[in-house]
Image (tube, rainbow, N blue to C red; front, top):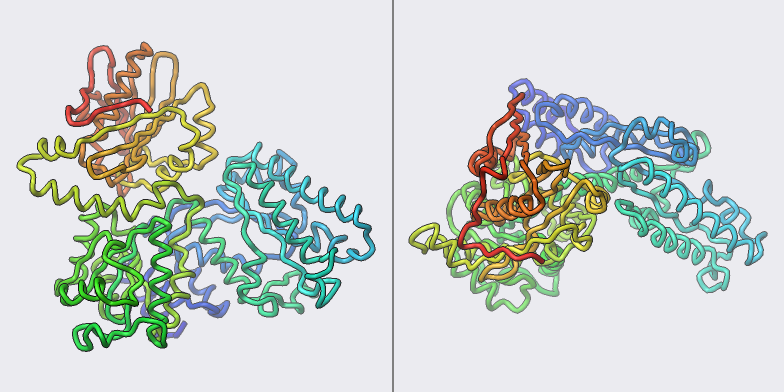
Amino acid sequence: MSQLNRKVIESLIKEKEFELAYIKLNESIKPHSSLNNFLFAEKIYRVLVEELAFRRFRIAILRTITVEPMLPFIKVMCYANKINPELYLGGYNIIDQGILDQGSKLYAFKPDALIIFWRAEEVCPKLMDSYLELSSNEVVMVKESVVAKIDKLISAFRTNSEGKIIVHNFELPQFPVFGIVDSQHKRSQKGLFEELNNLLIETTNKYVDVYVLDYEHLVSRYGKRNWFDERLWFTAKAPLSIVAMQALANEYTKYFKAMLGMTKKCIVLDLDNTLWGGILGEEGIQGIKIGQASPGNAFTEFQKELLKLYHKGFVLAINSKNDEEAVMEVFDKHPDMVLRKKHFASMKINWTNKAQNMKDIAEELNIGLDTFVFLDDSPVERELIKQQLPEVHCVALPNNAHLYPKILRELPDFERLSFTEEDLRRGEMYKTQIKRKKLEKSSTSLEDFYSSLEMVAIVRVNDSFEVSRLADMTQKTNQFNLTTRRYSKSDISRFITSRNYQVYSLRLIDKFGDNGVVGSIIVKQDNDIWELYGFWLSCRVMGRTVETAFLSYICEKGLKDNIKSILGKYVPSKRNSPVKDLYKEHGFRLVKKDKGITSWKLDRKKTSIKCPRWIAIREG
C-alpha cells in the first residue's frame, strides 16, 4: 500500500467519508500484501467498525500448530467484508481438552463458529511417521480410532454449543512412503488419507452446521512448496507461509459470510470489454472478441463461470451504455455466446447514468443494492457507482481478460453452505418477477392486479424437509424481518422438535409459476398465549398482501387451539423499516415501547384478520 493511498484513506476518515474510506482501503489490500500493510489496514478498519455497523461474529480456533501469526490476516479479511470478529484461541495442541471439558473457556466464550485446525502429524502420527512399521490390521485400528475421536469431539461440541463448526480435512503426504509408485501400491499412504478424509465427511454429515474445509485442496491449489515455511516450523511450530496465511484467512471468510447470510444475490455486468472483448458499436458483431481463439477464449471462459453461478441460483443482470438492438443481435446470433437473453433477469441497455440503471434494476427485482456485485472494465464507471451507491460491491477488472475467470472464482461473495430448490431456480424466479411487474403496471387497480395473479398460499407446519430453506431465509431476509433474528439449520431443527414452538412455512404459487417457500413464522407457545417469535417474508413477494394471508391463517389456527392472545415484537434495524407498522395495520394493540422496540398484542376473541379474497390458502 503506497504512502499516497494511506494519506487518502486517512483524509477520508477525517472528513467522515467512512464508506468511501472503507472502499479505498479494501482496494489497497492486494493478494500477497505485506504484513505491515495488513497491520495498517487492521488499525484503520477498527475505526470503521462502529461507524459502518459491521456484523459481530465470535470465532474460536482450536489448533495443533502455532497460528498466532495468522490472526491479523483473519481480522483484516473479516473487516474487509464488514464482519467484526472477536477471536478466541485455544491452547497449543489441546483440542480434546477444550471441547470435552464443559467448563472450558471455549464454552464460556460462546463462539458463533469453531475452527478445528489439525494436522495428521499431530492427530495420527503413526500413520505419518511409522506407517511402514504398522500391519494392515494396525492401520485399520488407528484409522478407526481417529474417526471415532472426530465423532466424539464433534458430538461433544454440538451437545454443549450451538456454534457452527469448520473442521479441516487432512493434507495428503507431500512425500508418501512408497515414493513415485505410492498411488499404485496396495497400501498407498496417500490413498489411506483420501479414505480418511472421506470418512471425515461421512462423520460430519451426521450433524447439522458442521462443514469440512477442504484443506488438502486449498494447499494443492496454491502449491505445497509455496504453502509451508520450514524455518518457521522448526523454530516456532508455525508452518504456514505468508501466502498460506492470507489464502486460509480468505477461505475462512467465505464460510463466515455464508454463515451470516451475507452472500450476494445479483451479478450486474457491463458488456464491452467485460462480457466480450472490444466495443460493439465500433467493431460490430463480427469484430467483438469471443470464441475459442485468444483473446476471445478468456471471455468465453468468463461467461462459462457466470453461467455456473446462474445455475447455482445467482441472478444475472446487464447495465451497459450501448445500442440495445445491436446487443440483442449478439445474444441472438453470435454462435460463440455462452450466455443468452434467457439468463438475464434484467437488462438496462441504454445511455442512462449507470447509477440510475442500478437503482432501476434493484427496484425491478425488488432486492437491495447491498446484494449487488458490479463487474465493469471501466474505472470511471466503477468510481461513479462507488460514489453514488457505495453499498454495491464494485469489482475492479484488470487489463488482462485472461484473469477475469480467476477473479470471479475467488470472490467470497458467492459461497453458500447449502443449496435448496429455491436457490437453483432463483434466476428463473426473478425473470417471472419482472412479468408480474409488467402485469401490475397494465392493471387498472391493485385489486385487479392481485386477482389476476391467481395466488395460492400453501402453509406447512414443522416440515423437516424445509429446514435448509427456512434457515437460509432467516439469514438472508433483511427488509421483512420483524425481530432481526437469524437462525441456523440446527436452530430450526430444534424449534421443529420442541413442544414449545411451531415452525410454519408458506409457499406461494401464482399464474406465472411457483415462487417457492417465501415466508416463515415461528410461534412460541405459552399456555393460551402465542408469541410470533420470528416472522420473515421474501422480498420477492412483498407488496402482494401475502403477509396478511399468512397472519390470518395463524390467527385462525390459534382460535382453533383456544388461544386468547397473540403477541408480536418489532425490533428496528437499518433495513426493516418497511414493516415497522405491520402489527398496527393488522389490528394489534401497542402495549410497550422501549428504545425503538415495540411490543404488540392481538386479542384473538375480539379481533380477527381477514384473508385477502385474491389469495387462496391451503394446508400442505
